[in-house]
Length: 182
Image (cartoon, one colour):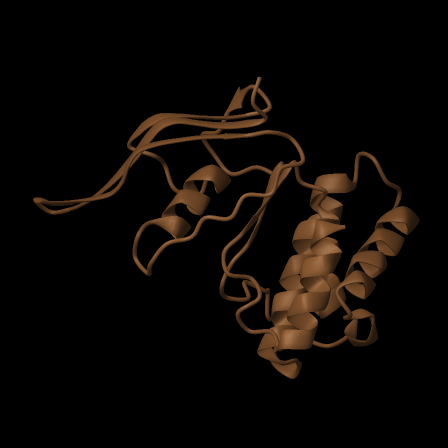
């Protein structure tokens, strides 16, 4: 059985009497451990597809299954790294990651383990030096790395990434791509 399965997925956006068919009859099977890249021109529906898999946007028709369960809402089993930073401005770098860790892993880890796991994931993306900084105090690329650390720290079944390296310099991009593959 496929780990992630998209079966005849369609998405139509409706505004007033106008309908825009964005996705039509998408079928995809992904096995556990697979890496998949979706490539296409701007506006072809890549982000919409990721948002549907994340449960952030409802598909118009078709079925999505993750590990045998239907995807019909957001959940911690699917982490998303968006093109924009999506950090909470009132929390520190550490707080932005720790919030997700506390929410998702509190049943499995005690307070000390969650702290250590948060710091570990920030160090993994090269942000261990900036734990106390707020989002407005760091660069766009650094914000993106915090978003990646947050997603990884949640230990999701599926990691969805929508052009996550666009704001990063070439060296950081290459390092993070290698880290993610590991």
